[in-house]
Length: 463
Image (cartoon, rainbow, N blue to C red; front, top):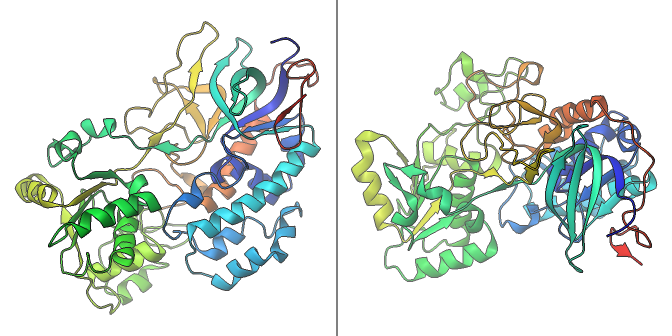
C-alpha cells in the first residue's frame, strides 16, 4: 500500500454499548465536541455501530427502561435528545421501571449509534463499519498503529492514533472449562455430551437446542453452574420457553459457590420482605442500597426472591439452589451427571486484541487468563506485571472495572461491575478524562488512508 496513514486522536475498537459509552458520557457533560476534536475513529465488524451483540439474546434486561432512556435525556449536548420523540423512546418511557427485551434495548443503542456516527463524521473522524482490527502496535512515542481488514474486500491497511480504547467485549470458550473446575472436575470434557455455554444458551439457536434435548427425556433435568446474572437469566428463560419440560419441582438446579444476593433499595425494605442475609458492609454508603453491585435485579431478582420465598411470593419449587463446597461434591457430581443439559454460566474473559510493543514483542495483559481485572481504577489496561500501558484503555464486559471511592458500592463487593448506566456515566467520564489528558506526541494533520482512496460516510472504502 502507498500513501499516508490516517492519524486520529483516538481509535475505539468495538462500538457496542460499552464502546459508545464514553461518547454518551461526554454528551451528558458537554464534552463531546472536545472528545471528537482531532479526529476519532471507530472500528466495527458489523454493519452499524451501537448495538453490538445485545440484540442476539432472547432475554430481558437487568436495567430498567428508565435507565436506558438516561442515555438520551438530561444532556448538556442536545443531539441525542432528538431521539426522545421517536416511537422507540416513547415505548421505553411507557415501560418505566420494568425490564425490556434486549432486542428493544439494542434498537435504542442502534439509534444512538446513528446520531453519534454523524457527530464523529462531522468532526473529521471515521466510522469504519465492516472492518476488523487485526492487531495494534505501540511506537516508542506511545502512539498506536492499528492494522485493519475490510471484511468485504479483504484489504488490509494501518491507521494510527495517540490513544486507543478497546471495547472488544468478553468471550466464553469450552477450552477454558478444562481448567475451570466445578466440584473438583472440569466441566469440559467431563460433561461434553450435555454441556452448553451460557452465552449460547441465551440465544435463540441455543434455546432451540435445549428444547430438543429436553424433549427427548422422560424427566428433564437442567444443571446450571454459576451464580451470575446469566445463571438466573438462563433459568428464567427456560421456565418461560420450556414450561412443560421445567414443570416439576427441581427441574432446574443452580450450582453456585458464593451466596446469591438480592438487591434492595434500602435495609428497611429488605427487612420488611424478610431478607436478613446482609450486614453493614453490604450496604452502599452513598445510596443506602443493599447489595447495590452484587445484588440481582428485575426478572432475575424476582426469580431468586421466589426461590427464597421472600416478600410473600409463592415458593418457586421448579428451581433449586445447590451450594458448592467440599461436603457436597458427591451430590454435585450426581446433579451434573444426571442432567440432560448442563449450562456453564461462569462469566467471561476479555476478548483482547493482539498487542505488540515497539520491538515487535507481544504485550501480555493482566486478566487474560486469570481472574484479575484487565483494567485499573482509571480504566487503563494493565500488562501481565500489573503496570498500566501508556495511552491504552479498556471498557465493557470482562474488562474487570471495580467501582471505588466516590463511585460507591458495598464494601463487601468482590468481582467486577458491568452495567450500561455505570459505563455511560462514571466509567465513561473516567475514560473521557484519561483520553483528553493523555500525553500526546506532535502529529501532522489527518492524511489519507491510501492514495486515491477515501472513506465514505458509511465507513466503506470508496474509489
